[in-house]
Image (cartoon, rainbow, N blue to C red; front, side, top):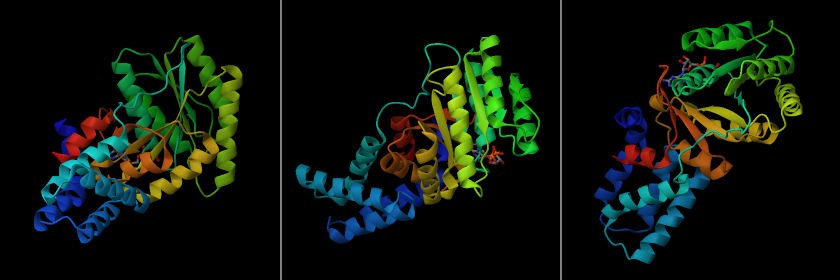
Length: 300
Ligand code: GDP
């Protein structure tokens, strides 16, 4: 909990502390105060629509409960944000038959490789057998980097040469995962956005090939987003959600970001659950996202 709390320092500073200052400065609850609260939320990358929605809910609750003291708005807001984020911890979808196949998508630089390495470590630590598939064949460096993580975690990696067909790598890694009785197969994919439509076609093809060989696979399409990019992450997410059937989100670099408010916008505008959060560069700095714990840490 303390690690999570520390990792949210910047967001707490840009968001919760500002709200704190505001409600203590103003004694009365009036329209000006609501407007300023909304402004703070927008600045903290909660997003315009989500900030408006939150303030609307706040206004309604204040009326219903006849709240008069501005200082009471902070705990109220905490309650409303927690409501918005849901209460269940983000667990990855699992398959009844092994392996569970997780396809990881996202733009280069967001922390995709690191997240795959950490995720593999997390599951291996729970005693699961994990295999990686290197289906980002566009860059040799991507394959090498993933191999470094596979070695670090101590698991197998299935790879082909640079430039080979990503769907063929996905197929082969699924065969290997079945043959070696792995519990979890994590497949890396390319993240070059300048050839957007090609990339989306490539992701669809990987999905088709997996599903043909194991109906229902991939069981999880995990989109990695970088919390430091704030609202930009939302735009990336919309793109991938349309094309790749995203089922869960991993939000990275929360530790380095003052824009952690984006996590509320992700949930509210995309309707896709945040399942994992990255709170550092270390191998164990990936956590299952627990909304209750998160809001407690943010508001503590
Ligand atoms: P990729 O291009 O999407 O595969 O990105 P990488 O996995 O190579 O990560 C890019 C950089 O972000 C690396 O320096 C990582 O160490 C760093 N990174 C990834 N996740 C986190 C995180 O949760 N917190 C911090 N502080 N850095 C991260």
